[in-house]
Image 1 (cartoon, rainbow, N blue to C red):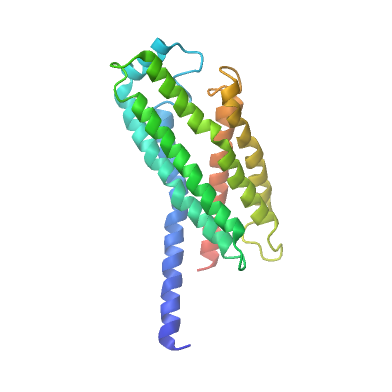
Image 2 (image 1 turned 30 degrees about the vertical axis):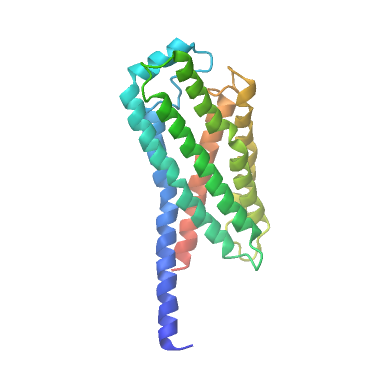
Length: 243
């Protein structure tokens, strides 16, 4: 191999690491934007609207806080979109250790894409609900709100598969030189389990498993972003070790 080839490969490797650093920092950026937009402004978490609210109560809330909800939903949509480069960076880390049949990294890419589509679609439905809430039948506004929550939480299985694949990739890796520490594999397994109950929202209109409940909303939300922080930290350590 000539000196120019070596230099070219070195440049490519530096660019690749830079791109991965940008990609992995998209995760924390996503978390900040979601907290600002979805939690602080649009108030989906904690929810203004509860499953047992009447159609008129839902329409009144959307009308009264329309501008705030619109701004928050837009910011949240941008934040959720940033999950895509973050997830692809994680998949690239796993791919670097796989052989000729990179099934796990391909699954991670697929889960990243599907999960991102669902959460962005959720924002689109909420945006539709708040587009003109004072001009349409309150029952339609409530139905759109229900659709957004069901899209948001009933789509738990792709997130569960995402975390489960990470658990398999980490725990099945060579323990002498793992891409991620084993504790992160166990954390991923618990995340997969704890996210899944969010899919039960279609059976409950109140209580812990309703869309404003502890096990359907708060636990999955907290464990997912805890997982995001842990994966981000470990990936940054990998990139720093690689130079």
